[in-house]
Length: 578
Image (cartoon, rainbow, N blue to C red):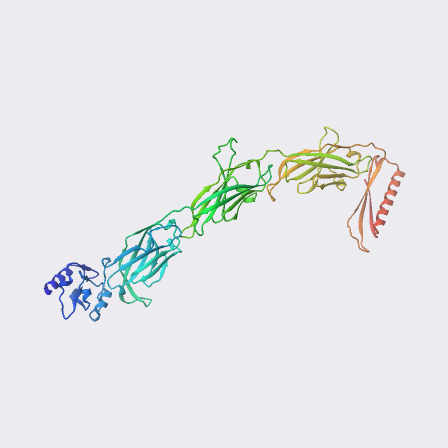
């Protein structure tokens, strides 16, 4: 019978390739021939070498229901000197020899934040002689791998920081995932690759391994219940404007927070819509801006410029409180406001995933639309009754519904009612003084414009002449800014009443102006000073010679006294007659 069995096996193997072939089937252990307590369990066909028999003294192994015929992929010259165990270690086998089971240690129905634990069990002949590479897959993607040397490597494309692999027993590897989320639900399976040592050494000096088989387990379906975070919203006005351009501030308070897992965060979206009955669709709303879970600001298109400049701010003052602030409101800012709060949880890659959101009831914000008004009253402080005297007037303003503003002033004049208007001086909202085109450059030192108080301006004209007679008044404009650094926007303007300079000529008059090229003189230095004489009334050219001489003599005397009072020496005098 043994001869018949050997002939049958030899015939069966002779019709197949002589390398890397596995034959299984009709050879039963109970028909193996016993010789000296050894059992024939494994056969190898090696071409010209014929049928080699590997005998094991392990009777339990020999009594398996079915013995496998393994063919070696290579024929080492020292095959006859190898033990039966060494021959088995070098034999090639197929996935039919592997048995893989994926099972669950933890419940298969989890809630976010709980831990998942799965077990991959591997059964194979001669397990200690085989190198196993075990990979867990989640929804068809590699999750984490334990290589045959025991090194655990996470897969970059599907990295999970809270995933771990642990060898709990020979042929058993446990997958652990801490803090599961909704994304962790799905089908899990383990893939096993079996390697056998081929003999010899690799270029790195290590053993040479050959992957003999690969097999996938059945899937284990894991469910993660989606428990949405819950909360309540309270939208309150912190500062409500009574007039346009005043500040508006709203707070969105999140209360009664439930089921928000550790690491979860809140985000907010602010929206603005028209008031009911304002002629617009009450369902329409404009996005003001969004603060996401990471604190990033995403501005709405309508409010983008005001958000970038700081005229509108969105802030998170606490983990559960958000604020919206308008530095200076505009009329278009009246309407209904609401906050849309979203709850975010951490996914397996460490990013944020929106879990739920809730919108607050609309809060109407409105104020009385009062237009800003400005009034200006001019008053004469010093009248110019004779030529050469000084004229001074004040312009006092009063405002309503204006709020914080800047003011510009124009000093204007005309010879008579209906005549052309001339601008003498200007003062900008930034307090920059300029002379108008109607000002004689030689007389600029005689014109003064200043702000004497928050609501009062002063204008002074020295050395009044006949040509200065006419009407004088202030033209004041109020300007506003949305915030510092922005350009001024005109709010309103007004003109004061007119003050008249009117006097009759009563002979020549003059005024004197003293100018110096320096304000500090040291001993033995030279300073140049100019004493300017302006004559009004009768023309100097028409005056008699004695009058001119008298005027010059008096002028020199006055200048001399001025200089003596300053105790200056070595001064060069320049006499100027205007």
